[in-house]
Image 1 (cartoon, rainbow, N blue to C red):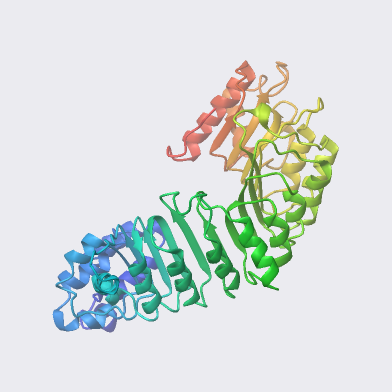
Image 2: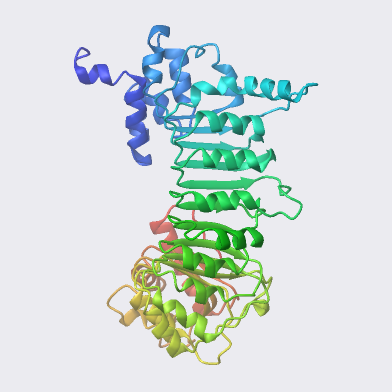
Length: 489
């Protein structure tokens, strides 16, 4: 390539090489790393990396650093990296930065006789962050950081256009009023994630009430993720219901620990809810019946307390959610005996599951106590949910009665995980799998489970037929999948 051509000149500029590598799929990065040293630097780093800072400090002339720094869009750094490049970048401003990941950043408390002087000293300590906090910053993520009022005050003053704020595994050492002020200063915020390392955010382990109230006021907020140590307080939900006519107007995703009374309120407030991952701490309200009113819901994953019971009406109410792609009902019980009883018969399950043609994930930690076989229901799952990728089936799978050799189409063309309570075969030497050679069993399994990489059976039953099926799955894995997946029985 002509070194004087515009393309050649462009491919030696760090910000252009970084942008190209960020857009490449993972399998192409190895080839990109062989092009030249510029590509090697970026292609061998993760997307969140020190590469932009390293390249600016080591490979760009001082007079040109600001020009390139203005074109850097993503930066990840820790406090040690900040110190490492402080001298080289002391006159550089990342005024084009859109995403900042800050990790392992300490925020020590400075002690002074005068409270105002101490606060001023804290603010001065965080001035080194200013070059990484331009007015146009869109996403701010903190991981393993020590949060104080002074640090949050810095974010409030410098960041007013955030779309995403994620605080992961942080040490809380601040007043929640300071965090409320950060949210209030960012009316365009769409994604909020709070996951403290220490559960001691409050004596009861509950989320700060005014913080939840402020979230309800955010007109653009679409996703809320609260860590397992932050329970949504009942009194704050009641306050929101009493004071706000239309709280959480844009909320689509919620992950957190909630009281059961929150679900009917969310069904009334959040018409656009599509994704809920909840840990419900009581049985006061029927969760599923309330969730069935969210007509756009695509994923519902709920962890229930051990005392939970299901009635037929609330299970059947989910039939109204025709867009459902993921339905997972988990129990906190330690053993199967503590799981809630599944109230539907086999025929009712067939009618019920036919209402979810888009289903990709179906996991049910329940007990099927009926004496009848639910194999017909499993066949209905296979025929009605061709996109299914994961299934945790509380019943049994009978490989003989599935009649796999006679089926012309794959039974589960997209299935990746098959988790069943029991697995068995008929034991008849004239029927599958006992009547087939080892290679033939493997080919049949491959045909009907072409993408399966994990097969789990809760209760072992190592009959000759099941051993043949297991061996076929193992051979299938060696032929079609990398060893990283593994098999578990």
